[in-house]
Amino acid sequence: MAKKQAGQSIRTQDGRFQTYIRTQNQPTHFAIGFRLAGAGRLDTNLTRILLSRGPIATLAASLEHKITERLSQVRSTLDTEQQRQSKNTLAQIEHFIRLQSYMGADFLMPDMHAWPISPDLGVLLIRLVEAGGYDAVIEFGSGVSTVILAQALIKTAALTNAQPAPLLSFEHLEHYFEQTAAMLRQARLHKRVDLRLAPLVPFNAPNDRDYPYYDCGTALRELRERLNAVTPHILVLVDGPPAATGPQARYPALPALLDAFGDQAHFDLLMDDYIRPDERDILNRWQALLTEQGRLFQTHDYPKLEKQACLLQLKACPA
Image (cartoon, rainbow, N blue to C red; front, side):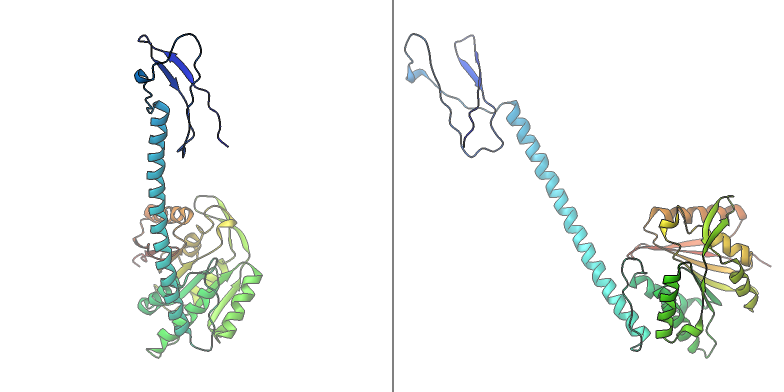
């Protein structure tokens, strides 16, 4: 039903009337009626009706243009994000297939989305192990990454008929500890991994702040004593504890390693979930700590990974 709009009339000095009527946005049609009162006659030959757009209509047109432009920008952004997500999904599927082939037909790869590492990080871990010549691998936060690392260490050692480097993995929750242990047994890798259930305990960091972190000090020192190399080269995957543990929950990883190994070890620390601000802040604080200690290091980012990652390579001090 059409709505009746009352207009406001103004009589000009030359006898003309101007009437302002506010209409709805983009009306399909409207009707204008005139009711005259008083004496005299209306000469229709001299009467003109002129419809013009006033300030309100101009503002509406401007807003319409801005909204249309903004919607176009949003549509373009959504299209770009959809293309990015499609490319990422395809890439993760390809990496997952590579991982399944690498692990062999006897082990069925578990789901690798949400909490577990992404498939692209799993492939990166294999490449690092194959190229690094590591004396040991340490993992803060267990899971499917534990199985991948164990397999990579065995396959790499087999190329030179050497013994696989030890893999020490920490997990603070019993449920995930048992889940990782079951995957290792399924893959027949359980004898190749030192999987530790390490509850979170207060860790006093160099900044004199306590963090809840893995109870890992004793196990790290034991590993150091077992290694024959004077300055061992160690790969460290930092993928825990989860962010819900508290701010900068993964910061103690580097201080804990330095406490156990001192300055006589080369470390390659791979930080997962580098897409998050908290992990980036941790890397900045690690670099500040190492700079203060006069240590030599370099970093390498992996921005194309789904969750991104950063590799901090720390050199041992000269003996």
